[in-house]
Structures are given as C-alpha cells and as structure tokens.
Image (cartoon, rainbow, N blue to C red; front, side, top):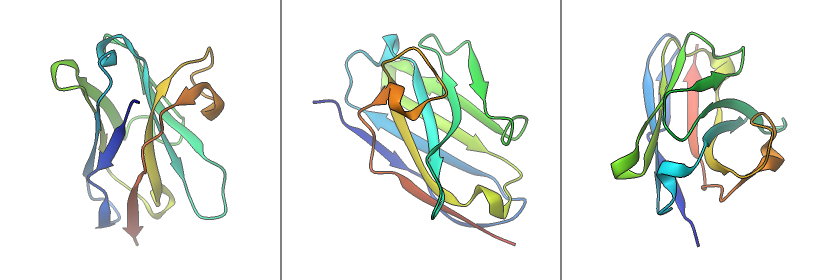
Length: 123
C-alpha cells in the first residue's frame, strides 16, 4: 500500500512564502507523475499542478502559475510545492497524489491521496 504524507502547512500572512512536502513510500516514485491539489471549505478539490516523472516538465493551474513551483527529489521519494506570494484565496487543505489516469487536471485520475496539510493565509 502506497502512503503519502504531506507536511509544511501552517498559518501565514498574505505575501509570505511556504514550502510543502509530500513524502511517499512508493518504490515507483521516480516513474510516477505526481500532482498537487487543494480543497477549500465548501469547494471541490481543484488541481494545483503536476510534475512529470523526470521532474523536467511541470504544469500549473492558472491561479497559481508564476507563484507556485513544484519540484521533486526522486532518490528521497519526495515531492515539493514552493508557494510564493500567497493570498487568502490560497487557503485550503493541500494534497499530493499519484497520477494513474490520462488527465492531469482531474482528481479522479489520481490515487493514493495523502491526508493533506492545512494552509491558512491571513490578509
């Protein structure tokens, strides 16, 4: 059973930076496309970004493009999300997951979700 554990969330102020981590037990990590999603209260889970298996290619939601950066350390089986210039609209629980389908932007095409880490941005 693959386990993913997100960490690094917290309470920050608008304009601050934050780095989230996603540690995974997957032995296939270096061959997996990995995604970040977020879910705000009362809203559906939404795509944040994805890193292809080699880490060279990353794709982001328009709402975070230019502010968030995904990176990965394959020997450590860890995925990261660097969040810069955060705003209150970034407040959500952030999740990482393994892409298993064909659509990078759809939560249904991911599996092995972690428990999430809460990010709260105050104005």
